Image 1: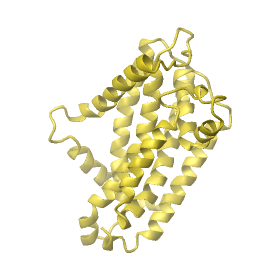
Image 2: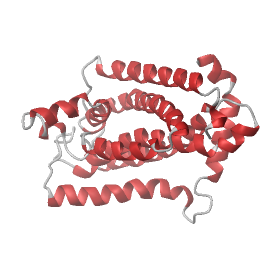
Image 3: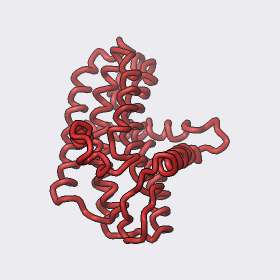
Image 4: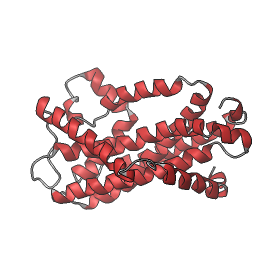
Amino acid sequence: MLTDLYTQRALIWAFANRDFKTRYRASLLGWGWSLLQPLATLVVFAAVFSMVFRVQAPPLGNGEGTSYAAFLFTGIVTWNLFSSFLNLSMTQLKASGDLLKKVQFPGWAPVLGASIVQLVQVALEIVVLMGLFVWQRNIGWSWILAIPILIGTALFAQGIGLMLAILNARFGDVQYIVAVVLGALYFLTPILYPISMVQGHNVLLSAVVKINPMSWFVQSMHDVMYSLTAPTWWVIPGLLIGGFVTFWIGFAVFNRASEDLGEYL
């Protein structure tokens, strides 16, 4: 796998460069939309859940009160990384169908290229998130741990995305099913609410939230960025290993199932 990625690095970067130039090309604000979209979601959800449903965020790590907006945005950034990789994997493979029929190249190259561009957007969101925490004076060494958590999230999402891309190439309904599942999974992940709200209140719901893999990634980001605490020692290595294994499986499944890919696109 690593050999294949290294060999095709120029091709992957070529697709990334193409997507980087064409994304938001026809819009006036350009890459500004990469920040306006999550910020608009933040404003709406923060207003609804903090003012209407009265959801209380946990105390900030610096001990100076709470901030539901910062808590929510931390979860949104992590979730957007996951969901965007899944959606891009399916759409980019479909979009490259005509080219794959004419030229022989690995089908995962345009998928990974699009993911690299998406990482730029995630980096911009992280900068905004850090600025929000700096403004609230909620700064700590635990921020460094966000890097392996986000790497694990990206690997995990990309592995699933590669498998979904193959399924969607053969069965076009998959992308619509994934949209429904993601919508449900969003509310089963502690993004809009702290995980303490479901613990001890509903046994079944608490169990579902806890076994949801994205709950581990989002909760870990809340710990290191918002609460300024390090998760239990095995959590972050577990997220990295789980992410790498998922990516390796997804890459292997994609390679094995993509021999006649051009016939389905």
